[in-house]
Length: 277
Length: 346
Image 1 (cartoon, each protein chain N blue to C red):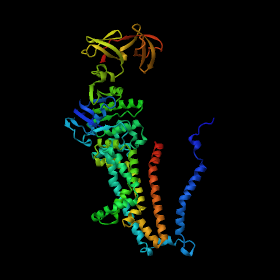
Image 2 (tube, rainbow over the protein chains, first blue to last red):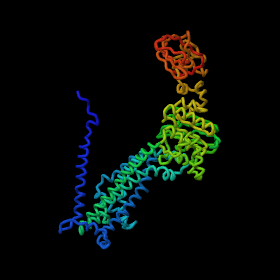
Image 3 (tube, rainbow over the protein chains, first blue to last red):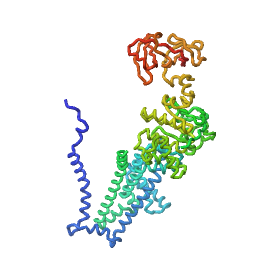
Image 4 (cartoon, each protein chain N blue to C red):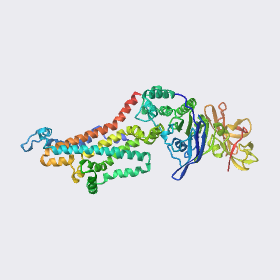
């Protein structure tokens, strides 16, 4: 009779693990490598050149690439306003529900998850008449698009903040602070925010990543952001369009790395401190 | 830390309902300045709700709460000038132990130098002088609760509220810390409420113990009064161990196991009752009720032995000195000490 297989018996060997990782990594790398290769092509003349890359940063070409710069600046403004919406509206709402209205937690979670189930095109159909009102009140500046982005980032921002909120005993911490004479504002700013820092940072970075990659809503509401600018640019200079897409991808990749670092920084710090004590 | 002057606390007919369920049922309690009162009772009896109501963490439906003669019923928690230690570890994880202790002083806008001095004194008082720079995750459970105690006391609050602060700790640390809490409380003279479901803990540290059931106080008294003179059947059954035996009350006395014993409450109506006989009121003797030893447990300073009586159904628990060590199966005789007993109507 053979003994039942343990977890370690069925775990893949180191070689198999590396093989799987290599294949998956290769599949992901192909389009990126292809993009890089494309940006280095010397057009119909054949051969490779870095002229497309250097040209992008050449001040002489500034007016040619103006549309990309405008799109980039618009996207950065949108990212900042969207993050502000997350921090100033979503975060206090979640804290309030956690501390004062726990019965509403499921309702809030349901509302925050809805945007992930609604395709952007459907969202735009609903948003179009709303934006005619928004334009009357706030004008048609590009930053007003952040109201829509505030909705699209809800599922991601909610999950990251909620996982942090669930990990700290927010109710006991706030009660302890209240018993020590802290006002509600002091509880929020001095106790909860510092302990929710990781969740807030992760939610902010994810929001920035989502906003930088958003195309459908901006395009259909006739606003210019980085993605619409890349599309526009690709019609006159496909090389620069791909370079911008690569740079945006790299930026988002760095953001995701930072989120990962924030997640593990606390743990490794604790481990370090634990060893010292 | 200087000694704080204890203040009186008065709860008058406080009522609290949760979704139609009565958590506090017109509870009234008067506590003297500097007194250490334990709120004791089974789960759901309302003891924590009562404590949280005093803290202002629960809004009561009716009644009044006054501290030092001032009505604080509608005052927010932050303005009640209380110190509180919670059941779960409640140190702020992003602050060091020292900064945690300073938190209440910071809220009161005390200057930096004074804050640090007072925090160091409070930490010394709970025996953690060298731990000011440690974070909560670098401290053991017992140390975290000590810091929480220092944090609660450093502001010299009028009342100290302890919500089962020892329940998450292991047995040895529990005993050490409860003695330390009592020592500090006595030194500072601060009026203290201590919620616990552990009767041994309540009887060991409190000046008075309020036994609670169904949102109200069944009996309040010194540990000795509760143990020796329970006023209600619930208290008699809840406090301490008792042998539960069938008996009959006749003219202010009860007959049990063929013996007649005086009643604690002489006005009990005649008829069949359940007699609550303390293990220490039964002795191993050379003659008396015959029985066979079933088991015997060593409890440190004493021994508790279970004896099956000759009727083959009644088991009596006897408490006796450790020098007597009856083995299971041994034949013994039991004698009743003749102390007054409580009874519960059948």
